[in-house]
Image (cartoon, rainbow, N blue to C red; front, side, top):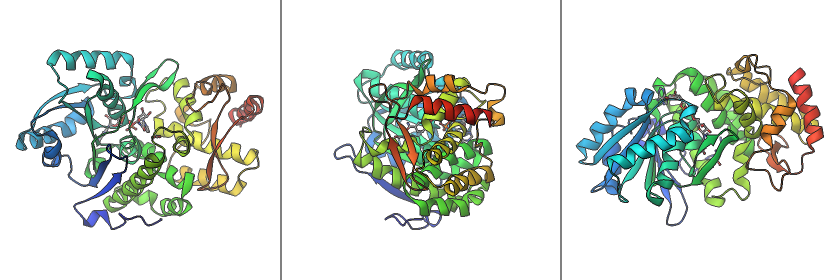
Length: 384
Ligand code: NAD
Ligand code: GLY
């Protein structure tokens, strides 16, 4: 794994900090075990004299809301909490509207801080509420899934889904602080951990072959529960993401590479109804394998590198192909997939843009993918 300035073993330190450098909107991502119980003191400088509005989901509330509220109480920080049902369906207009009404009815002022306690669903929804309520409130992320700790809690993308596709309504709204409590991953089901792992290994696939090699050696122990490895991976991912976000906050260029596998993945999620059938990270895993296969087909990438990616995903139990059992009988055809992909935010003037790879660690944004060629390729992928 590439060394970064934060490369000391996080497990032997109380916590480590990665800085996201965005001028006056810069913020820290703190990574360590036990941060939920320390949230009050860590928030004191930002939140003293203000009200914290905690947004979480029912599952996470049952596990961690008590510890968070105790900590806020001990620090003398006024707070109130709102829960939504767990799952992608909470990133909807309906839940957004009801939650906004409940928060406004309870009374909220411009000094309030929105605190997201949960996975990427809670983070994206709470972040969008923070971006829009009273034209913008301060926002803190307390991510509790691997996916949220390595990706969604950092970088300020917030939003909800619509019938037309994922994250099509949203805003860039950076948090003021991110507290990634590694210990919270210990209650996360294995399937969710694996789904989050797909967003972890992508930092290796897009620009850092050494990190991919590190992942090949360590992923199984990481998934089994080795805290030091989890901390190391989260820190490395946050460091990589912070660097990309600092250089391209609004995705004018290289930030789009973080969407490796997502154009296909989002289409699969839409086809499967954004539910438990296919988790976001699982869709990304299939999409990443398809992106590598397409890169081979277009002569960008050596075939053995695509095979190495698929073999690694399969070894840790991630789905790798369009016939994955998670898709069940809902196997989409190429036309349905292309229709879904047409609404992707990366597209420019109606032309499809995809993240492809010249090899492991060599992702690039491909313009002008011929849709007939893609239809034929996807038709063969579905039939394989
Ligand atoms: P999620 O938020 O639905 O969490 C997964 C499940 O785990 C939920 O049922 C939740 O209740 C449960 N859970 C959360 N923390 C737990 C814990 N510590 N112990 C036990 N259970 C726990 O899903 P996710 O995978 O975290 O996030 C997926 C979402 O993130 C998608 O909507 C995706 O679009 C979004 N995303 C956003 C960005 C971004 O940059 N904003 C990046 C990647 C993904
Ligand atoms: N998860 C992609 C991004 O933050 O840009």
